[in-house]
Length: 170
Image (cartoon, rainbow, N blue to C red; front, top):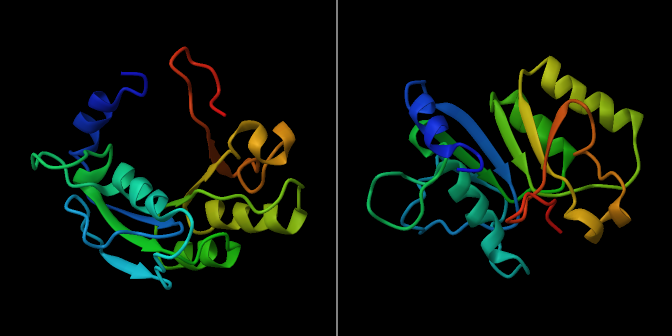
């Protein structure tokens, strides 16, 4: 209810498939609710956060209405590409150049503004017509509560969590 998922579902299923890419640490290619279009990178399951990429992919592209596992907000009309080439601005640019219109990146590069990096994400948005979504840095865990980048560039969507009483997550 907090994010109006039911309303979004009713709208989203009327539109054509959207090419979505996710850069993260690992993706379970045998997950019952995920059907990946393509997988890039090494997909090494010996990383520390083996569940995060799969969880994120489920939010974007889990198969809905199949009576199994999880449901996603966008799974009905998502063509999903996942890449373990994460924390790479070059990978985000490459995916935008390949035509992915939504790219999710659950990582930060730095706690400092960079004109060059800002220009890159402006190009991705303005030239390649791509929406790039970044994690905001998990509150005080990263950047001591200050801005995390690339999430804080105006051309990117910055996402954080909310608590049960609408407080910013940590």
